[in-house]
Image (tube, rainbow, N blue to C red; front, top):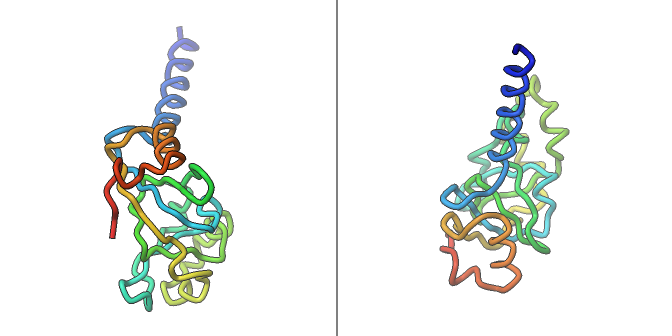
Amino acid sequence: MRSIVLFTIVVSVFFSCAVAAQVKPGNSAYVFKSKHDCGKYVLVGLSPDGRKVIWVPRPVDVNKNVPKQLVNDYWVSSQNVSVTTAVLAITRAEYAKMVHAQPTADDLYFLITEKRGITEVWDCSTAGDEKVLRNIVKEGRLKSACKVVK
């Protein structure tokens, strides 16, 4: 009996984690274009003029909501992304190790590879799951299926 209860708990946790990692209709889904490997490198938010880092992930949270590549240079993320999002020249693995270093926004500004590393962003929250989004991008239907994010 005890092993059945343990098995049920393990299976429940496994499936709840697997579902949380997927893009599902109705959840936030931002499709964006970047030539950088956004799944590997850290994303930060810049001020509208691009002169200041105004948002950085905590090192312990850097591997949550990692963008997934859809097609070519198109990515999807459940985290809000905009054209003022920049890509750092530091991997998520390296950044996660900085838990005790507490890098400041000024420190991270000098690690930016390109201030405008993301060239277009679409809110596709109502468009469908990852498979549907991949087809939308392949077929060039972002403009009709999603809302542009400025």
